Amino acid sequence: MPSFEQRGLPANWARDEDQLFCLRCRRERAGETAVEAAGDEASGEERVRARKTGTVDFEILRDGERANGVIARCCGTSPAVIARARERLGVETAAPF
Image (tube, rainbow, N blue to C red):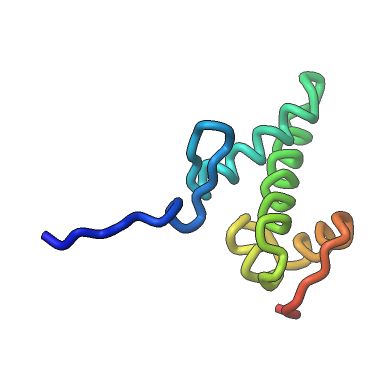
């Protein structure tokens, strides 16, 4: 059996303090953090909107060089939503689509 040397974390994994998180878990955590920030008084609709906003913001800030359509597919939303979020966050795109 060939030997190999592991060099760092697998692609799209991140270390937070002493825990490791895959990309899917990181997205979920971003959404949950946004829901918590919305507060206990938030309606169900507001909580859903907060979760989606948190996930969209995470994806834009994680890799803002990707096109709006690519990020939209990751988040289950439209490129127009990503464009508005970019504007709100002040993050420009390198690719038009």
